[in-house]
Image (cartoon, rainbow, N blue to C red; front, side, top):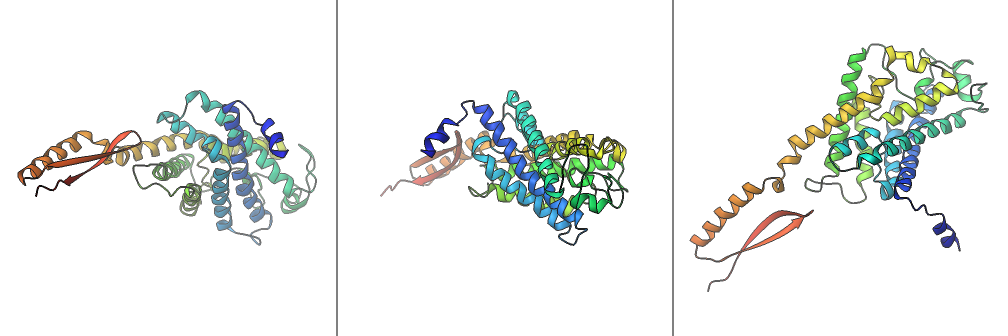
Length: 321
């Protein structure tokens, strides 16, 4: 009976189903990621530290991908969706729907984290419990008791705006190089079913190595959705003015970094796979055939195809005796 009821709930529109999966996958990512920041911040590092935040976002990414992968492919990142469109691996018409779904998932996940850390949550009104206790009754964006960073990223005091641009380009490019390598069947792809774990590991190592400058957003939805929530929920327009107007860097510059990472991977790795060099393969075939014929044997070529393209060939010798 339950199976029949669930089948009736199935949404017919494929795009709508995929958008729901993207929404829920990002929701899981931000729930664990921003939740870990909230716990570390409000406990003043007594219930976690910076590595806890790295693990929160890494495992949030892993489980978000596991949740959404079977339905939508689990982009969970507008910069990833954009890059796949440029590479011809995703439809441009689906891009705005994916992006809106990802932003909505991040927004509602941030609201959920706020509910967990407020005893009483009333939009634009009075807040209590962990965050208000930590801040002394004021919702602040900067300073020793700042809590806006629970939801979105802000640059360190020493970081210039353009230094942050470079930081986000490098971090997001590194993410896309790792993601493309893990999904490249011509390279050494991740074992089936372990892709989410290894993408989470990539997020972890980026956070460990590149997180101190500005919090390694590397994802427009991860930053803008929660930032919009914090603006509505009482932190005000300071969330857009802080860091010399930092907000646009994790939204737009991450897309530039993602495209750069994809370009680097395709130019330095993708085009150099053996099946990307058909002319060289044909030349090698001719040389081998001549060599075998000189040895007085009849060559037999066995070809196999991978992803619809001629792959590696092998030569076996027929017994002439």
